[in-house]
Image (cartoon, rainbow, N blue to C red; front, top):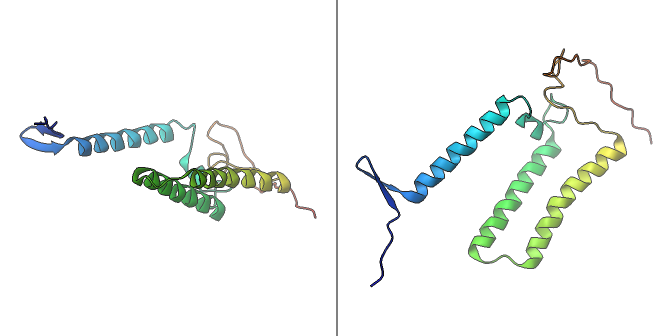
Amino acid sequence: MQDVISSSIDLFGFDLNAIFVALVLLTLGVLTLFWRIQSSKKLDFADLITKDGRSVSLTKVLQLVGGLTATWIMVKMTLTGDLTEGLLGVYLVYIGGVEGYSKFVAAKYGYNETSTRDAVPGGNGNGAKVPTSNHSKEITA
C-alpha cells in the first residue's frame, strides 16, 4: 500500500490546501516587490505603456498584450506536453522580432523615449528642470 502525502495544512482548525497557500503567499510577495520597486523612484511601471510619459502608446500596449498572450500559450502547451521545437522557435522569433523592430523604427526616425518622471513639468524626480515644450526632431524624407 502506498503512503499518501497530505497536501493540506491544518492552521487554527482550518484545513487549507498547501498549493493554494503557496500561490497566495507568492502573489503577495510579488505585489510587495512591485510596490517596493514603484515607491523607490528608480522605476515607473507606467513607462511600460506610455510613449512620452504623458500618453498611452498603442504599440507598447499591443506588444505587452501579444507578449503575455504568447507566453501564456507557451506555458499551457508545455504543461500539456504539446510544445514542439518549431513552436518554441516561432515564439522566440516573435519575442525577439518585436523588440528588434521597435529598436529599428526608433533608430530610423530618431525617436527618443521619455519616462513619466521626465515628463512631469518642472522636474524629473531628481530635482532637474525639464522643458515643457516638445523638442523632437523633424522627420525628413
